[in-house]
Length: 239
Image (cartoon, rainbow, N blue to C red):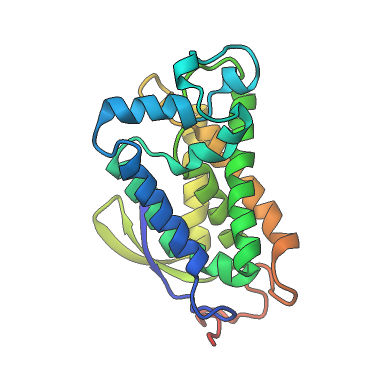
């Protein structure tokens, strides 16, 4: 519905969001190292490193040739795999636009912890939604949803440049864009069809809720919630 392009939200506490940049570069590198455009290799790595509910819930076992890591580690590794370049590009674009400000609000190490907890928590909620599923979950969408949830809690008044419906440039406040995003996830969850059933809507919704909750205790002392003290139309002050 809305494709984010840029936010009017300068950094106030860190000079460079190098953890966010590192996550983008690392995830992109993993995409190419684990198959890239080779669909068969991507599928094999999804079995080895993706999050399979029936496996982590001890309902099924992987064939021995696909067992590479402890099954519980897949709560993290799944978030660094992607099925195709569009899947990767969409997640990394959201992370590029929103992740730097969350790193700014939390600090470098706490942002990394936040991202990994968001990935693991979103994955766990997905496994609860369909415990016997044998389909591997892959993608950073759950962790990115946590970033989106945190951004909405911290910066709902910030203006975003977006492409509406992939073609109309608009400048809107974050609460309109991200509010529409979560409503889109909820709507698709309620109206899932066979064509959309393979999309992990529960991971998106769970990640969003986890991020919105975690950012409150993890943020730097003095970082306000909901842009409190920010007049309408004025961006946050930068350093």
